[in-house]
Amino acid sequence: MRVLVTGGAGFIGSHLVDRLLGLGHQVICYDNLATGQIANLNHHLTHPHFKMVIDSVLNRIELGDQVENCDLVVHLAADVGLTNVVENPVETLMTNVRGAVNVLQAAFKHHKKVVMASSSEVYGKNINGPLNEEDDLILGSTKVFRWSYSSAKIVNEQFAMAFADKGLEVVCVRIFNTYGPRINEDSVLNVFIQQALAGQDLTISGDGKQKRCFAYVSDIVDGLYKAALECPRCDGEVINLGSTDEYDIEDVAQRIKQLTGSNSKLTYGHPWLDNTQRRVPDVNKAKRLLGFKPSTSFDQGLAATVAWVKEKGRRVLV
Ligand SMILES: NC(=O)c1ccc[n+]([C@@H]2O[C@H](COP(=O)([O-])OP(=O)(O)OC[C@H]3O[C@@H](n4cnc5c(N)ncnc54)[C@H](O)[C@@H]3O)[C@@H](O)[C@H]2O)c1
Image (tube, rainbow, N blue to C red; front, top):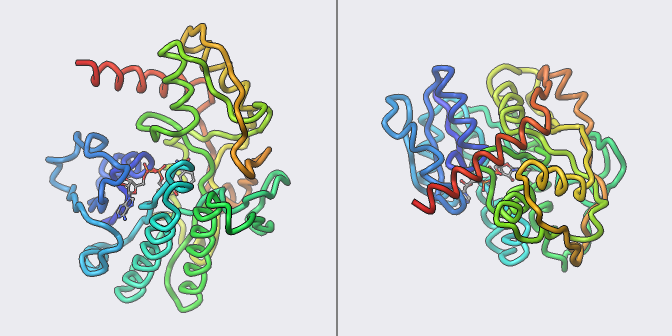
């Protein structure tokens, strides 16, 4: 298969590219390097089945040509990161809504299947748990910009379902917190690891009692791969992908301190506005449709992530 991966230079995207090339597929990585990095793909740049296109999903002409050229699109390109989203809501909405619509329109025109990355952020303030795909999506005020990311992902899903109704093969995956090597700079785990390694305080927002689930990136890539290539029954569906093991953020900080052998203190700051106390997925649909079964324990995954952050720090110093 010739797979177009938008956002393929990013954290999750680059791991998906690894998997696809490893299994003998051809990959076109389409990324404007906004947050993605060529360094994530250095090991593939001369691979005969790999092609890199550095452009924006907002460029409809180039994107359309690449969609026409492939068999299948995995759309991961997005403006991400809470700080970025809050500071740049217009850009977030443009990239995340218009970019996704461009992908869906091109795929519809050229009859190509799409896997669309959505997010657990669509559940917003819904703290019921475990969160099921049919549950209500509860967002806050439109004056609170953190909701621009969630709103955009909901609009993406709504467009995807509308195109599915017109015959497009499309599946939306609601990805929950993901971590592992190449993790985003401002992700809470990366921030804690860097603070612990530098002997700085680990800065927790709020009281640290908020609960989160963290899925290792290779487990999420398993789900994405199956949704893309092994699941004809997934078309027109929305599927949660994530880990169901819940941890207090404070407990996560303590584990990272232990793993890094750090003497850092934990400090507690203002919580993010509308920060949710709990977010745990119901992954029964993913199990049923995809055979989804995360296999990496939190301790194993954290150890690999700490090792990568350390190694990255060493490369920067050289
Ligand atoms: N990492 C997580 O925990 C998580 C959780 C929920 C959902 N997601 C979703 O998964 C997808 C991948 O996220 P990630 O964590 O790998 O983030 P990432 O920032 O590492 O990857 C996003 C990629 O999109 C690219 N991009 C941004 N704007 C673009 C544009 N206009 N044109 C082309 N490329 C563009 C970036 O350069 C980057 O490579 C995103 O859609 C994100 O919303 C991720």
